[in-house]
Length: 364
Figure 1 (cartoon, rainbow, N blue to C red):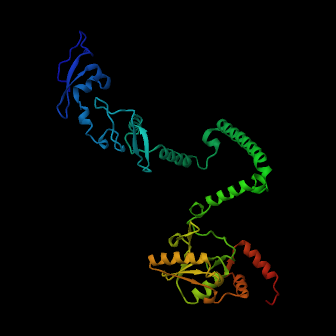
Figure 2 (cartoon, rainbow, N blue to C red):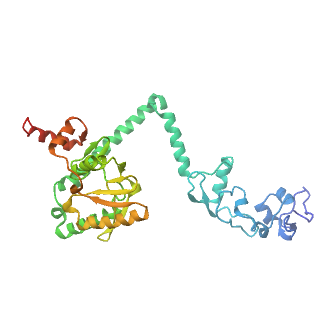
C-alpha cells in the first residue's frame, strides 16, 4: 500500500520519476521505490490495494501459489518479490502421474484457459482426444465425415502415398534384400565378421535379453507330441501318461505349474534363466516329469536345486518323477484315445498320427 501522497501534473497524472514509500501488508515493512519501476510490474490500482514484499513471498510454499497446486518446485522470484514467469518448473499430471518440465508462464495461461480443472499433460490430452474422435468417427465413411469433394482429395492422397511407398519398398528390396537372399553370414560378411555377428545376436537374445524371458513356454514348442486332454495341455506323451496313470489314478487334485506364479529363476553359464515345472499336486507338491535317462543330467540337477530352494521358501515340496514311477501309454491306447476324441493333437502331430494309423494293419 502507498503511504505517501503522489505528486501529479496539472492533468492529475502522477509523475513516474518520483520516489514513494510503500508498505508491505504482511510484515508492515516500509520500502522506498521509484514509481515507474513499480508500474512496470504492477498497475497503479494494485499498488493502492495490496503489496507483499519479496521476503514475505519467499516464505509462501509453492503449493499455495496461484495456479501452482501441481507444481513440485519452489518458485523463484525477482528482487520485487514477483514470480519469474520464464522459469521452468516440474508439474505432475493428474491423469498419468508423470512429471513434466514446463515454463511457468505457459502453464499459468493454460490453466486459466481450462478454468482451473485438473492438470493433464499433452500426452493424456492427445490420447483423450483420439479416443473421442475415434468414437465419433467409428463406422462412418469419408463422405459422411468430410463431404464428397474433401473425401475425393483424401482418397487421392492415400492412393499416391501407397503407390510411392510400394515403389520405395520394392527399390529397397531389390537393392539390399534380393542380392543377399539365401546367403549365409559367412558368404555376405566373411568368417571373422560372421562370428562377431553371431556372438552379438547370441548375447542380445540370451537370458533376460530374450523376449520370452520369464514367460511360460508357448503352445506347440518342443519336439514332443503335444495336444490337449480334457482341456489340459500336455507337451509330450510322457506327460500325458503321467496325467492319466499317476495323477488321475491316485485321485489327486492338480493344476498346471506353467504360469508366472510358479516361475523359478536360476543361473546357467553366467546367464539368468527361468524355469517352470509341469504340475502342482494338492497345492503342496511341485512335479517335474522327465525321462529316466535325463534324470541325472547337469541342467536337470541345476533346475532341481533352484526348485528345491524355491519350494522351501513357499511351503512346498519338489519331486521329479520318471517313467519308472508310472505306466506309460502304449501306441494302441493313444490311437484309441485319439479316435474317441479323448485327446487332440496340434496340427503337425495330427498329420503324423494319420500317417501312423495309415501304416498300421487293419486289425491293429
